[in-house]
Image (tube, rainbow, N blue to C red):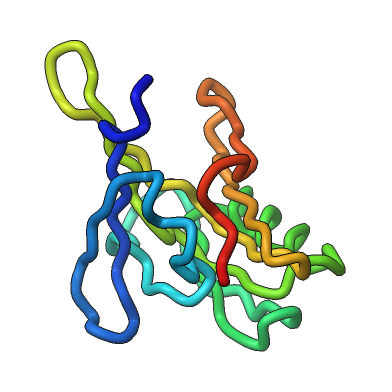
Length: 137
């Protein structure tokens, strides 16, 4: 797939609004410092548990939408190389056969060597480490 066709959308802390760029141009975005790109649903009778986890590595609260996400946040928090952590950090949008497709990863973790790790929880989807475009300056 041509990476110029893949867009990334995130909620910037400085301006507070949504920003959008092609995948190849987001390598300097500090995704560990952005707002969640979408709202967290919470309603009476829902089947999963949403909440906040206090991440010791970043001394900040991180949202989760299920016990599985909370457990993943805890694992990332206990990894010594993690220096930044954000939930629902961005939306990836790419062309499908008949419409544009999007996915919001559950977590972005910044590592101490300034590389990044993107955490997807869906087992049917590929898990992707940031081999392209996640080095912050």
